[in-house]
Length: 118
Image 1 (cartoon, helix red, strand yellow):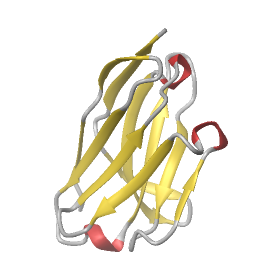
Image 2: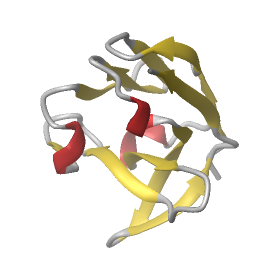
Image 3: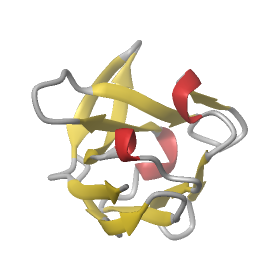
């Protein structure tokens, strides 16, 4: 069992930056690949970035490549999402999740709101 708690969301102007954190409970955090998802009003939840259990491999959706960076600190049971050059289109609730199987995320946080004003 993994409990995830996100923090770091807020209101920022276009071009600004935010750093999201996701703190995990449980001693098995380092065995899970992790992902950051987002869901905007009226839209489906989408995978923004993912990172392997060791942190050695990352992937991003095209719209955030070069602007967002996912990282993790297994000693602190935390995964991060550094978001730079934010755009109004990045406005959404952001969730972290732990991958429990092939493309299956089984543990989810409660989400944190990110609002980017133009």
